[in-house]
Image (cartoon, rainbow, N blue to C red; front, side, top):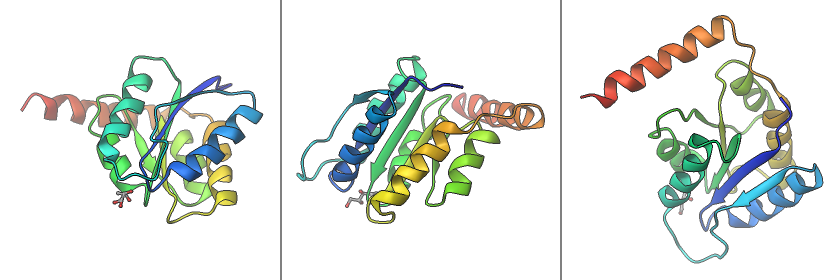
Amino acid sequence: MNIKKITIGADHAGYLLKEKVIAHLQERGIEVIDVGTNSPDSCHYPDFAHAVCKQVQDGTSELGILICGTGIGMSMAANKHRGIRAAVCSDTFSARLTRMHNNANVLCFGERVVGMGLALDLVDSFIDAEFEGGKHQTRVNMITAIEESESQK
Ligand code: RB5
């Protein structure tokens, strides 16, 4: 899959790294939608998780990237959205495999956890991997079934 458009968001703990990731994606010829934040002023990461996930849900972007201090809060908020499979990663193997096996559509990581070099490698590993389908599709369908049954409670 040749990724053409990505929506990215960060809170105050991730916005500096977000700027580096945006420059990297643009260098790769990928269109980037930046939903903020754009300052060190304290803000709330669920707002940015929501903004990114809406654009992945409605097809505006194929994939999303979310950065906070650890990546964890962003992934928790993102995974509350129907159809979103967000993975917090700090190694390239996981970033690659979560696309190949889980068909993850949002990558999360923490500016306080990973350095810039690793962050860009995480992004490349995630973007360049392809979902394998087959038995992995069966398992992703099972996640979707859980999501649907839980949303009716
Ligand atoms: C902000 O201090 C921090 O809690 C946030 O960026 C994130 O790491 C939460 O999971």
